[in-house]
Length: 184
Picture (cartoon, rainbow, N blue to C red):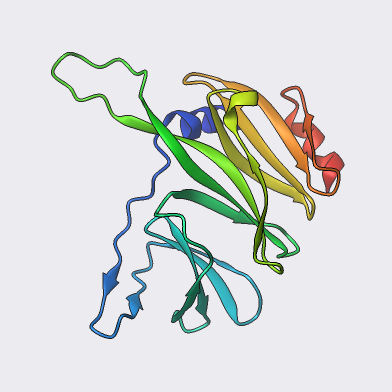
């Protein structure tokens, strides 16, 4: 069942269409349709317009994590709040769905996965899809230093992997989602 949802996530365009309205004072208005996750007691990471911002508890934007020219498609914070993984668009390809000659073929984002060290404000690693399959997507953080991700083509999941941050290695789980519990 998980694989079916994963396939839909990999096949569909994973762009969240959001709006950001700016007031005259350059304040960002939070509309409630954004993805927001706690970073610590007083700060949150806000995903809006394909960028990541830091906000305080009253939703005032206090800064931007880094500049990506609106290339972030999704993100996830590690359980220990030490790292952020995000999917960065590195290109687009035409959807391979069944379209007739009168339809415009939609584009699908091809992403890398970037690991960002929150404390040191630096990029630790970028994982590119070429080694795994056409698309890679963040799946979960089974532990503080383990990020799982899936690879897929247009129609099926072709693998699930765990990136071990401390060892700087990728472990192939051979389609066995139950093995994620080994990394908790």
